[in-house]
Length: 224
Image (cartoon, rainbow, N blue to C red):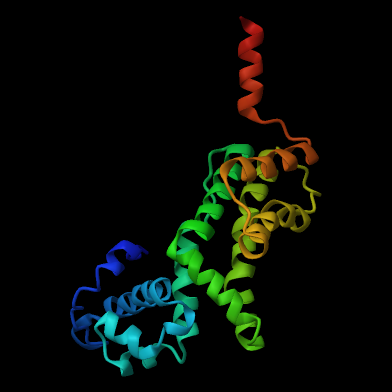
């Protein structure tokens, strides 16, 4: 789901077209407008500056329309984030483990550090520290589902015979993606491509997996 840029926001929001909830077949259009408005307002104003009233005004819907779907602003922000994560963080399938992992970790890092959704994620994590019920919803809605997506490259590699079937996938996923979240949420150190590629190389070494691209390069050099 495409979000508005902060540059556009700085110039001031354009008048929103009025949506009418379930009338005229516009229910889904209004819902998407609310999700995008919530993302944009969080980036502009921060978590405490986001209100149901402000979201409704930015989306061009009645406040009652918002309450038809969500009880709180955190519910809206969570739904917006979950939709973005599902769209952006499903690992690609190149037919080989190494490029799959490199692409997935690079995308995860970019998603968390450079997108509006990443700003929403940090705000939600902060709110979860003070709201146990919301923390449980965040774990079940995002963390559990994202771990399922994170496992996909490893599961496909097992099916192809690149990885042993007895691999401790939970532990390996922790070591692959855990450092990314640690830098994003704790240390604020750079999460660049060199860093995520090192995480992948360390995993390939632990799992004794040959990088198909490296093997091909070695064979080509040997044939010269």
